[in-house]
Amino acid sequence: MKPIRLSAHAREYIDRRGFTQAEVEDAIRSSAWKPAAQGRLECAKDFRFGREWNGVSYATKRVRPIFVEYENEIVVVTVYTYYL
Image (cartoon, one colour):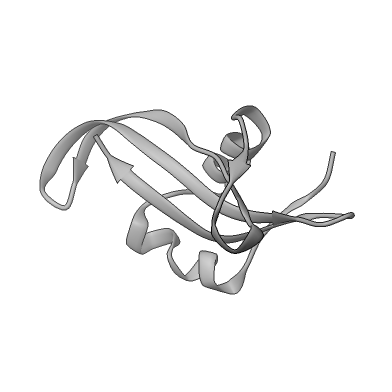
């Protein structure tokens, strides 16, 4: 199993977008991958949320990492988070 590393850009957005590294790793390891822009890959996974984000209550959080798979590791370029 390849290690998953968050780029500096992805790490900068952890608090602002409200995801965790564990959620990103879970999404990558357990969801179907598909091609993304610029030769990258993406996937998405829904997590039970059940609380407020920016003053609004949401039941679900969707984590969508954009990443590159290299021979020895997976590098997460950025992560999008959607509250549903």
